[in-house]
Structure formats: C-alpha cells, structure tokens
Length: 137
Image (cartoon, rainbow, N blue to C red; front, side, top):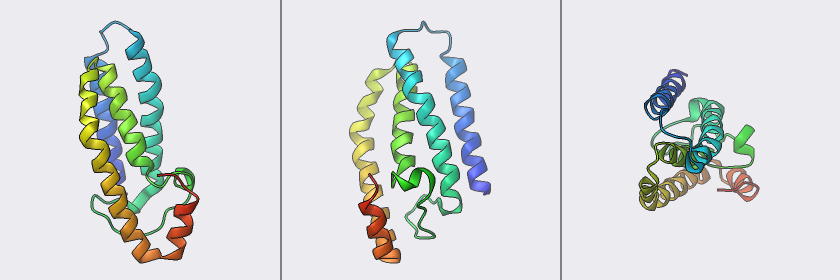
C-alpha cells in the first residue's frame, strides 16, 4: 500500500509540474489532443495502479493473478496507459519529436510484458492461459 501511495503522489506531482510549467503556451490543436489523450490515460493509469494493489513490482513476480477491473480486459494497462500519458505529456509540452522515444519504449514494454507473462504462466498455468485468451496485450 505504501508503494501505491508514493507512486500516485509522484504521478500527481509530475502532472502538476508539467501543467503549471507549460500552461502558459498557446492552445494549439496538438495541445488540445494532448489533453484529450493524456488526462484520460493518466486517470486510467492511476486506476490500473490502484487495482493492481500489492501485486505491483518493478521486476516480474507472480504474487497474484489480478483479473478484475481494467485487468479483466487488458493484461498490461499500466504499460498501455503509461505510454499514452507520456505521449500526452510530450504533446502538451509541444515536443512532438520526443515521441521518437517510443521507438525504444514500445519494444521495451512489449519485452517486459512478455517476461511478466512467462512468470505468471509458470505460476498460474491454465488459469493464466485462459485469462490471456480473453484479454488484450
């Protein structure tokens, strides 16, 4: 629970900093798209992090198979909504060239998701395979 709170506080502080620091720039279609993409993604990222609860870890561990909430549809919502939130931040900052970082970030997240999948499959077997068959990414 302590990790949940610290993570959420950090996300909130970064969001406030970016909002305040770059808030004076003119509202272009790119910045509007950033808010439309970034804020819902950020909210869903926080929700996914809360729903994951004590099963959160930086390295792959098989503490519990979380299959409720967002995890009932998406196996890795933190990676998905985290990437969308980062894209929103880059666009809000009017730095679309930073999106090239996704050339590295996306394959890294796919690799991490696969490693987590292997650990979960080894621990939960058929239960994980059934879960995987009815969810996306």
